[in-house]
Amino acid sequence: MTVPRPGSLPGRQHLRWLRSRVPHERLFAPRVALALVAEIVVDADGDLPWMDLELDASLSAAAGELVARLGEEGMGLEPWTVATGPDWWEDDAELGPVQPLWVVLAGGLANRAASSPTRPRSQVLLLEQGVDGRAGVRPAVADADQAVAGGDYVRAVRAHVAHERIFYPWSGLAMRDEEGRLFLVRLRSGRQWHCPGGGMEIGETAAATAARELLEETGLVAEPGQLIGCFSRLQRTFPNGDQIQAVAILQSGRLTGGALRPDSTDEIDQAGWFEAGSLPPLVPPWSERVRLVLGGVGPRFD
View 1 (tube, rainbow, N blue to C red):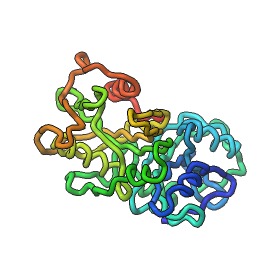
View 2: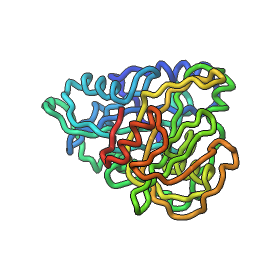
View 3: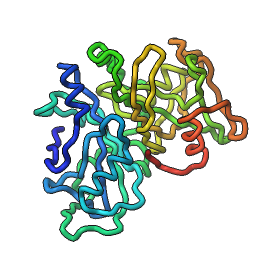
View 4: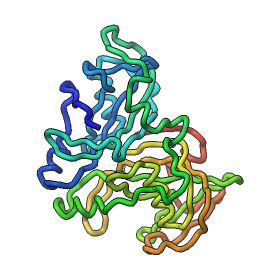
């Protein structure tokens, strides 16, 4: 799908730089869009106001800039929709083939400008075909075999940009059993406990990535559910010098099958179910994210 870029929302410096280094690969393009009030505020072209996310920025900073440019005063924004995958591929006139990763934030307005154009929600395609954070992921991946296994996106990009900072789209699952225990895995490297998940590949939805990563790492099969959070502030430098800024999508998950087994890639060295009072050692950002999951509050974004 091709979505015209609103001329009033300049940006995409990172994408321009990345395309100058990576001539042919389809590139991930993390984006923020706003769905404001029930009668959705739109731009002059009838689309949701949106902009590409920049390195060293965040979802919340981009949302604030969008609201300010619209002359509106936003309140109570929360992540409503995450949409990516082949249905949203673009062949951009400037950037060539890109894979948008849409994060749509929704909320009311304290003061809506009378001149702001609006459209009914039913007429905004991005809202109709995305992931409704309150109603759950659509379409749900009931069987992990449905998850699309793509190529190694990060490795393909790294071949052109070496260790420089790039966006790392990530998707994972927060699964709790009938007793309320939370399923966590531990990375062998760094001994960090976290909810299972991993890097998204071109052509995958967030739900497909989360289901695929769970199956690959643990042998378990799950159905992704409600949106819990969208996180964009984490920057990391790996021991080999690679730098990333993560755009992480965390969803609830319901276990539907499979059997727990060791990770064949040896990336995960431990996994298990944990009660809220006996969690393993957690470090940021997962100490905060796990509190969000266990508190049942959300969805949230940063």
